[in-house]
Length: 129
Image 1 (spheres, rainbow, N blue to C red):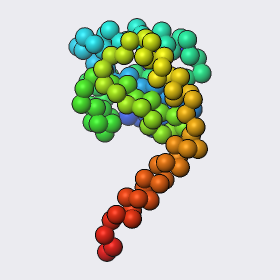
Image 2: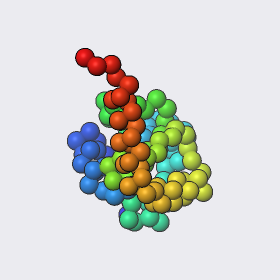
Image 3: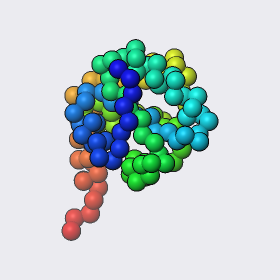
């Protein structure tokens, strides 16, 4: 499957309704983004079970800001609606393959348990009102 373009209108729906989503935040003027683009596209062709999406940070400035993007390219990986990886910089193909493998191998039961434990600890640290 080739990459899709995401906007603020379809970002949340795509992340929540797809098992694995890799998102490349990029801009046309960005040299490293242009270097990473073909690597990302090739990975999308080799992994048709994963949704590969691109977000143009110039066209989607509010979405990029909401995602905390401060450097491009930035790659984010979501699994079952949970952000499980985020890293700025153009990854070489072998590293992107490693990220894909690691995201596939995640035990989401453990991930969700860890998230809930972190939330419980944060609530316990808040002063009573």
